[in-house]
Image 1: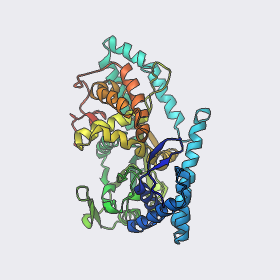
Image 2: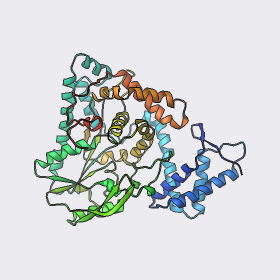
Image 3: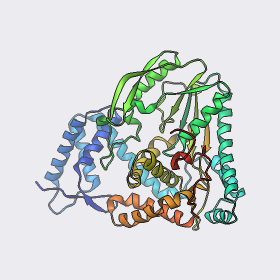
Length: 446
């Protein structure tokens, strides 16, 4: 029996063999079908490793595909048919995503809100911020205050339009869902919407999704061994839906409380009941995910989706990616409010993005209103705060095959930051701006 030291990825790269990644993959498949027994996943993973060592020729480096074939075989032979099916489906889905990435440039995506983007683009062109060059020219003409006022006003109008639409269906409404990918500005937008509704006697009461996390040792992990809080499977969705149904029926429930320090959930912790003038608020990454609120009829929900839909091109004619804006936002927020190193944010972002593509982006078309949270001036603020770090990461990750994703993102972000005019002093940002959610100094408590 030989020792396996390395494996070959689909890209041809040779990387160290880490058996724990097999365990994590099996456990994730089990979680997808309701299983939470990590010890069984570890036992099955060991069987995979043993078979791999027995069957791999001495001069051969096993491939990812070969290992996955063995995983499927072990799951089926040990009577875990449902887990095997979930694993196979996930494997097929990943293969489909790889094929789609190869052809994405030649076709449009049905998940992109084209009508909304066109309106944002029209606005960007009419205000002279549709390219970095035009934006820089406006700054050079000392028009920063105008840019800020115009952008903040556009965001305010978006929020007010969402509230107006929401109130039109208020008689049947039982729930408001405010969602969007990581660092899209959900917290600030939720506060603003709540304030406007309060003026007309409607109160939003939050059912905190985070309190429905399973205990940490029951969470799936990503390929680097990090606990995955980005997937709906990390949440006790049956309990969440039970409480939703009871609250809407006028009952009082005892909601759980999740302690992030200990990674433990305490059930039956906090009493909650919805009054006649109150509407349940769901502020969650996964608010549009089908299983999240399946116990509530669609006609009783109003769904708001957020994204920084910046329409600005760099000097090469490429649009700045929204995910890169959100990455920089999250780096600053994590460092300021969670003592989380920005390098960790970058290294983990591949998993954040994968979860978004699986559990958030496909449901954009089901939303009732889309709010653009991008500010054309925000990258100028991020440049002095982050450009040195991105320069370092590009150098550090260049030849590291395990950080290929981080390197690609770092290069892309660095290129944008190098082009844009820096703004060292961020005191001009309004204290109630959505950008304050990420740079601090705002009037809201986060």
